Length: 332
Image 1 (tube, one colour):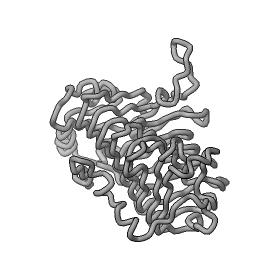
Image 2 (image 1 turned 180 degrees about the horizontal axis):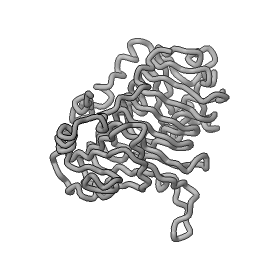
Image 3 (image 1 turned 90 degrees about the vertical axis):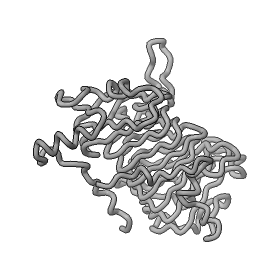
Image 4 (image 1 turned 60 degrees about the horizontal axis):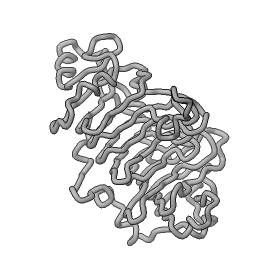
């Protein structure tokens, strides 16, 4: 297949083979180090988050060494300009196991939003080389990451779950995912934010729906996938590109390779025919067996080259402040 070069994730640094002096200098380049063996500043990720000053204007960079950190994490409002850098995407794992029907101490369901393993409310969050997971399993809604803050960016990260894995939550939030891996089954990328997924692998581990956008009416963009690859577990044979969680939901796939698991109809109306006239589900220049548009639902859209021209990362994410996420990209 084409466009699979990013599936081999680079390691930020192989500390085990680095001379001690170089390792010390490397770690000193971070504001905080989290390590479960006691070699860092904190044992847990939440302790490092708590140490970040409120409303700090400079960026605070937190290096997280290898380990499985089972914590329910909250990056609160005012904790802005925070970066998480993992030692290795496969072995730096932030995980928790909440799900929407788990009861709180008051005997109430946690709910979908409350089930998240990691809540990101601060603006300008950046993460690289980290796995974010909800380990509850196939038990219904169980969010791995909920992103409310604006200008959030994830580079070379993995998002693992089943239903509702990734929740771009904020109505006015812009988010950028580059060289990432996102896995789930039902509505596993859902929410109101404007989000671009670039050069990423979107993997279905069961039959279901990839996206469930709730784009606010009047927003120019919802979820946009550019140069991605859609794959699935063996035996998965019927996955829809999306369905509208709310009227006016938007999902667009451009230059994306689609496996045979994608349903010929492409899109689903969530048994709400009225949503067909408001949702905007579109495709352009996709490839693979699943990209055959001959049997697509009549209310979806096939963009022309002229229409597709507005779907550039710069135009989608610029907003009123001219945000350019490529300024944050780190090269190994």
